[in-house]
Amino acid sequence: MVERTGVVVAGGGPAGMVCALLLARAGVEVTVLEKHGDFLRDFRGDTVHASTLTLLDELGLGPSFAEVPHQRLERVQVQLDSGVQTMGDMTRLPGPHKHIAIVPQWDFLDLLADAGRREPTFSLRMSTEVVDLVRDGGRVTGVRYRTAAGETGELAADLVVAADGRYSGVRDRAGLPAARSFGSPMDVWWFRLPRRPGDVANATGRFSGGSGLVLIDRGDYFQTAFLIRKGTDRVLREEGVEAFRRRLVALVPWLADRVGAIGSMDEVKLLDVRLDRLPRWHTDGLLCIGDAAHAMSPIGGVGINLAVQDAVAAARIVAGPLRRGELTPRVLAGVRRRRWFPTAVVQAVQRRIQDSFLAPTLAGTSGVARGDVPLPVRLMRRFPRLQVVPAYLVAIGPLPEHAPGFARRAPERIERS
Image (cartoon, rainbow, N blue to C red; front, side):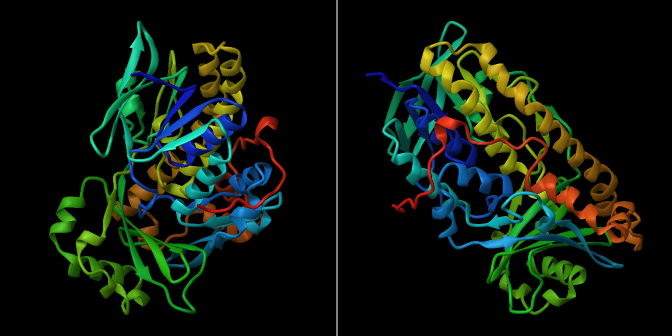
């Protein structure tokens, strides 16, 4: 028996859950299929940006989010051989939220899921993976799915939203033109290190002598990113955990008393960094958003923010046509038209940072490796007000999206399930 819904959202990440919640509030029947059994996965992006905090206020979820334990990131610093420099000062931002909230992503997703369950047209199915698309001629008309228990089924829909990330299987099955890849000079190792009273707060980067490290304050531990040259993961892992500990201490000597917390290289997770963008985000009956449409570099941690804003724009643009039975490829193309500019701007900035700073730094050939101070750092030292520019680009973005009228609610506290 074929089931039916209005919209299938493949992927229960931030983009998928925001899109589903907004569509449900528009009265559209929407079903989210998430292949995992829960949201409890480590080393996901744990940032809720200032523009997303404003969105939560508009959705009436601000009070509920405020009760979720989180840290506030107000400044981003970088430690060069010449000293520490603030690269982004969120306290200078306009609007009510002058920070980025650092919160386990599963708490954020649980909040969205609980809000969704209050809508009669919202459904979330965990442990259910989209394994194929259903077509009628050239149009996507639904999905085939498989549960963790091995059960299979078919779900017909007016629209399939691919929100299943940079390795999107739904996008691959849609037959869209290949993404344009901009390349990356780096991959990232993610791991945890203990944080102690008196340690640096907020987010601090350290770059010197062909290495790079970012420490993100998570209260009692640092979520840590160690930058490695692209494609060197296997070789460096074979050197063993002791060699890795020595690399960390050489870069940040005050970590010497805690690198022993890394018991083995199995605790160090690889992020395969990609930077690409689909030339077309849709086909008839299907739309890609977030990383499924444009994989972002971790530079600035802006991927989640862009994905959430894609979701808001998508819901606003397609909700009316869906209710009227007038959803066309032209309507779906409007999502890319709306979101192409901010995506291209942020990716251009990331490419510039990669090419002019990170690639030569990791190769040991940049001025930073010799102790020189880059021009942007010199300018922000001389004119501190300039620190709001990168802060705005990261925390708000070039084209922030706001909740459409049909999705707005008065502030309320959502009971957590």
